[in-house]
Amino acid sequence: MGGKGSYRGLWIAAGSVILLVLLIYTIDVSKLIQRLQLIGWWQIAAAIIFLVAGYALLTTRLRYILLNQPGWWETFYANSIGYMVHITMFGPALVVRVVSIGQVTPISVAQASSAVLVERLLDMVMRLLATILVVILVASQQTQPSTSIGGSLFLMIVIFGAIIWITHHRDR
Image (cartoon, rainbow, N blue to C red; front, top):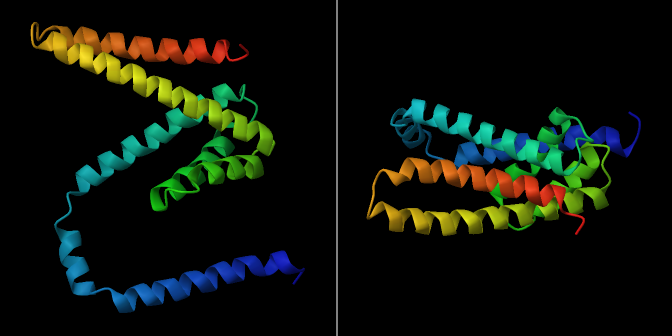
C-alpha cells in the first residue's frame, strides 16, 4: 500500500458498513417495508427526472458563468456534490460546491467562489423578478383569466433575458 491516501477507500468502506449495520439494528424493517409498499413509484420517478433536469440546467448556467471552461460532465459531477450536501445539511452547501468545483474541475477555488457568488446573485434577481411578476399575474388574473398563459410566457422571457443581460454586463 502506497501511503495515507491508499487507506482512504478502506476507511470509507468500513464507515459505510458500520453505518449500514447501525441503521439495520435501529430501524423496524417490517414497518419500513409497509411504508415502501405505499409509495407511488411513478411520482418518485417523475420527481427524480425533474430533479436531475433542474441540476442539468443549473450546471449549464454555472458553465455559462465560467465561460465554458470546464467540461459539462465534470461540472455536473462537482455541482451535484454540493447539491447533495445541501439536501442533507444546509450550512456548508455553498462552501462544498466551491471546493468540489475547485477540486474536480481545472477551475481554481477563487474562480469557483466568484462564479458561485454570481450564480447566487442571479438566483436572487430571478426570485425577485418572479415574485413581482407573480403578484402582477395574480392581480391581472382576477380581471382576465386568459392572461395567465401570456403572463407565464412573459415571465420566462424576462427571466432568461435577465440572465443573459447580467452575464454580459457583469464587468460593470
